[in-house]
Length: 321
Image (tube, rainbow, N blue to C red; front, side, top):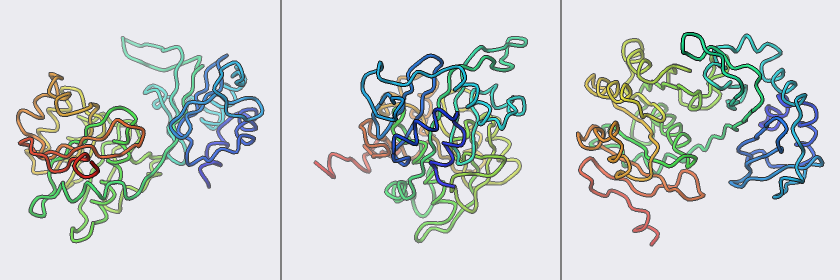
């Protein structure tokens, strides 16, 4: 099934007709924003557009098709195979992963039970984030994260939306399958938000390598400890660390002799140092490699690579300047 078919089959008949008329290249389509009584919005090739009823890409909101309650209801029925109740655990986390690895973010009225989120009802806002694999994007980083044929603890630093998850996924694939003179190793992925492997009914929709095991929708700190105890990985990979318990679990993983791959939101190493919870990662030299991605419009572009001492191993300005 093509990416276009995967997306069209979960949309209401009206929205499906509009997208079909748009003739968009679904490889460049990044997000669909569906908000009750709001304009139909897409993020396409890095730009925001409003879609008219005839499928035209517009820059003026008043020209857009207005999302109706029926569009939301019908789309939710297709997303959940006509059984939202069956997806209650996923909805509690705010998203559902569908075939193809596409992530459907949901928002509406939150129902609490004993102070914790039990469910989301009256869902009126849907964000469909397209799953895109960019195989090979991690090849330029790999030579820098090996030291004496050993994989180094590596932290990828990136502003939101700049390709850190895509980069992490490809590095996992390469390490798992083996790369050039480096044999493949067992990799454990803690996929809390179902974005690395993008599992659908337990099966990864993205290629994350032949020696990779996944804990899907599992909190990172709990998942790291579970993976160490159950699957004996050589490498553990997690996306978007930030909580104190994440840092404690990472230290435990490293002390167990397992190599660590992680990503974090930030613009630079200095940015990480300014965040009290994350400062320990730099000051105590827990990670041996720091990969900083560019905040420009080209996702996955490497800005700098540093070692634990702060020495520059790679600088984009020196290469291209």
